[in-house]
Length: 315
Image (tube, rainbow, N blue to C red; front, side):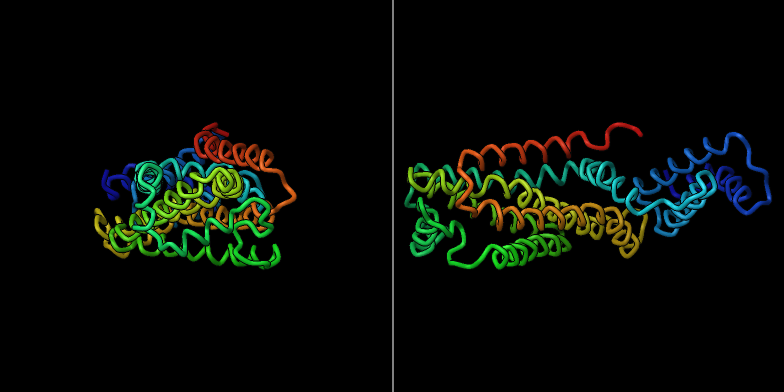
């Protein structure tokens, strides 16, 4: 539906609500129902990518109605809870096609390169140098107190390093999406290739296999998810420039940015959370491998269930 037609159909509702808010009309008993219809109007305007001026207008009208009905501002903790329990997972599910593409690229490349190295080990040298492979093999030897660290730095220092490293990868994956999303897919494929080659190479040695996988299983649930969501947000911005629809490219980019904001914030939080687990949990030698596998499995299951079901129940 064209925006003009949508505005014409909804004009009576919006005008009536404005009249109640400015005091020129009496508030009727069905005002809560009008408020719900107004919220639906805002949701439709966002879903259909109408102009930012229209969505901003409806957003302000919704907030004014909320104050009128409930007499208080929406508290920030409430907004945070609403974002966490509804907006974030719902917005991710709305972008399921791009998420499927990003996941297929990352895990598909990881699986293919992993199987290739597993059955033809000499192919590992086509992706990495012998020195790099030997370095990884040494880092994940049993009894290595600095598992995955390559040094003797403290946990806090490594936490800072992991944040910088993970955020830089996520940002590059997101920002490169503006170029039609192609560099984003290359970045995802490159990271998938790295996981596939290293994982397969270390899995061939019975001594490094449990050390490596117990190290990555927990924080990878947040790190890989954050990376995939960064790719989704970047590709959506790139697609907005290629196919702006009825909007100008500038307005299409602004609308896409607004829609992707919850996903970008969520990806950043997942990336920081991954760095926390990587610095203080995954690399800890005091935690047994079985415990890491159990907690890692729970984390992966929690992430999958969260994005699959959170926010589906109408409040």
